[in-house]
Length: 421
Ligand code: 5CA
Ligand code: ZN
Image (cartoon, rainbow, N blue to C red; front, side, top):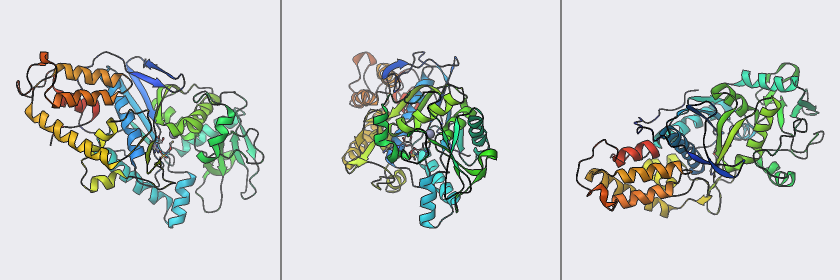
């Protein structure tokens, strides 16, 4: 699937210092040491394309973008994969409700998402695949799980054949990412696409692996499992395997995916006999009007609407940078104003020129310190005030330069914010 055009990149000469990143699984911040020396492999869970990109999505892809920029700055090559969940209940339900073809709905939203990502200067993933594109490979994974004795049928009275579930009891790998108890899992499972009370399931958390064809739903042929469509979690295992190989270094996404999605993706992978991600990085939830921004609640702030209303996408990036990627926060117009003011000041300072190696050093060390963007903004505020440490000399002298102290070049390479314009 065509992704989007990456911004032009001019990386700084690598620092050679590793990115230190928080890992949900261990609860600790640790240096990223790639499984394949020299190359970091990152997977970020993509959108379900039934509504436009909102600020919550933007925050999650911004965080993943910073991860890859930080990994590149440490001297690693980066390979990234991302999926598009274009076959799933909420998308099919929305298409049905609006009387549109599900593929057309998905294509139009994927297109809008690409425009938003481009406007925000998010680096495009090397592998970008939708479920419908990857269907043949996904079916092969589902069949492999069946052959390994991990799938079991559950009677589906409204279909010609059974639905198939993954038996989690075989490997005992549940909860490896979240560390949650079954009780905690059950609190949210039903709200997050699970069906704990379905009759015939062996375990309440067992995930749907293959759903038998229902009238009016798209379906594909999966041999002995019958016609139908895959459950949610298997797609990310398959698309990650194909794109960057298993196991890989970092699985990223919003914290709403810790459980069930990342726990259960990892469980599928273990059931295939393959370890999944070495570390898990989760971004916080963005709220609006007091609640998590979500398509189902409808309290959304859309990126494309802000851009259409004349908001510079770099202002949006600066709002995102004002919050640590792991914290939950609430979008407000006031912050938009503050970020607008910031961008003006930064652009003015960039025009004034002047080299500040110490500012660049703070920017780099803040980024590699678990993406500490707030600290980077503090350093940039001081730089824009002309208060960079005296050893850098007086702002306004020395021209813009392309040397080690070129702050606008560093802001672009490390944080994706261009100060041109
Ligand atoms: N397609 C699946 C992942 S395989 C999915 O969760 N799609 S999504 O469209 O619902 O979300 C896309 C990404 O945005 C996910 O990583 C999700 O964790 C993140 N996300 C969704 N809502 C928010 C929010 N309010 N704040 C931050 N991130 C969010
Ligand atoms: Zn996913």
